[in-house]
Length: 499
Image (cartoon, rainbow, N blue to C red; front, side):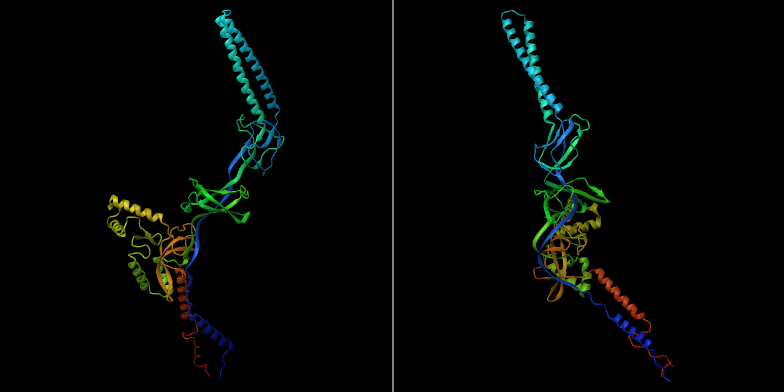
């Protein structure tokens, strides 16, 4: 008697075989992307947010006290210097002006009378008709009358000014941005009131405005007065405004444990489109290169990254290092910068030494520090070390690695020395290059590549490790899959259960 196999068990075994076969297939090898070296414009900028505000703001007050009888402007009106804005009740100042004019007339008459009496007294004194005391009295009366006239003229001038002050006029050319009073409001004088008087209007000159933006302290070192700036506001999203950095405030501001510095940006606002209080996005152009050879930052590698890159490409690491060493030896110790360079481990690249400092001097200096410590250095050697540190601190570099991992906070300005893999005769070849200005995406190529070269963008070392881990996991699944042999064949039937 022959037993037939269950169709369900046969299907299960077949499914297991297919699953094993799928697991046995190795994952696809990592691929690279070939990017040709091309010319492009590179712009490095620092971004910040701010608020549009007037450069000049004036609070308009009145020197006269009293009731407002007329307001001649509204918010948003453009006014010229000397234009009447508000009128205060002029009755009391007018009466004071009339009284001052009358007092002046009296003083003039008194002076004329005193001068006449003095003239007669002088004639009589010549004929000895009056005493010396009487002539002196006449002279005193004339002087007092003249002083009274001066006081009257001063009072008249003050009364005239007080009367004119009832008409509040624009001190500058600008726009009324706020209005605090209406007709019938009783105000106090700004000159006689201890509290400073009543604010009637606020006006500002909006021909030129400024944006007070807060810039992160990591970017503030790249900014200086005069830098070109592009400003965008939500009201005009497709219309950028041009300006320049006016100044950097010396006092930092801390918000949510982030240290920032206020930066004032001046913008011409001839059309009056920018209004005080608008939120603005400020982009400060730190550096710019037009029409230069550039490659993606993801193609850059430091010496630390060469091993993972060689592994991805299937190259022998010793052969790669040998090729790079040959190029360095042929160029006198540096692939692109010449022999007068030193390694900057913080930037992962080469840095040019200061003028007059050789690499041999630096090597000897570091050897002395390793054996005897900093105290073993002479004053001249310490000065040399200070020049080195200043040189390394002043030269830009792509801090944080080769693939643009700066996050926009430490964008390089002057680049450094790096390694890229280039297709030469169809084979990946390591090449030393020198980069210039770089942004988050591309770096300027200053030496080492030419137009028409093709650089390789490789997966990161973490991706390579992840793929290796996946292969190992599949291998473990292969060894532990129940009911399936290594070759993927169906096991034979148990004894005594055949035909």
